[in-house]
Image 1 (spheres, rainbow, N blue to C red):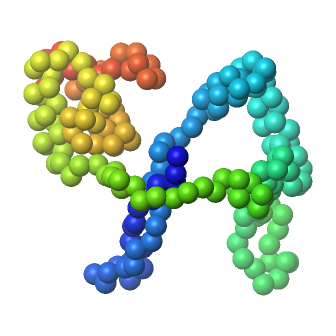
Image 2 (cartoon, helix red, strand yellow):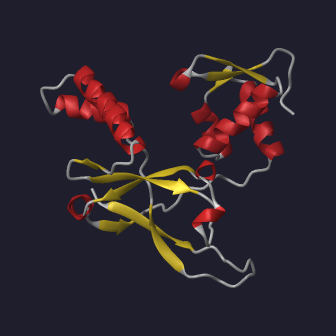
Length: 203
């Protein structure tokens, strides 16, 4: 399968109405989780899922240890981990003390070979970037009220379909209704559902 792309305009640094140029960006197909990687590798090898998870845990522990000691860490032919520091800029080293310097970000520098290995064909995405529908909060809640007249519960996915919201915004909406006492939840993780609280109307 090819990498899909679409175009977006660069942010306008001036904040005016001047039209900015378009540039291509990859349209993400989602995130491959660690659990999925473990299942795939296990099916393709003689390693059990437990073997793979144990190795991942060991790699994480050792890599973080060596980075904390100031080392660069090579991970196979993929690339190198390294750490950075954070401090205010100074003109003279005497102007800053060790207490003012802190551990910064962890960086990963991809090797040229792995970058070439990741490369593939590209094609224009059929549907482009997905965006949440521009419905008002009142309209979203009105749709939810109508939905509850014929359904005892709703999932995050169903709420997203109902309102046109993408995953994170739909989840934020539902959690806000829970906080306000209009809804309550049952189940956990991917099995969580939302139910209307007794004698509470969604407003």
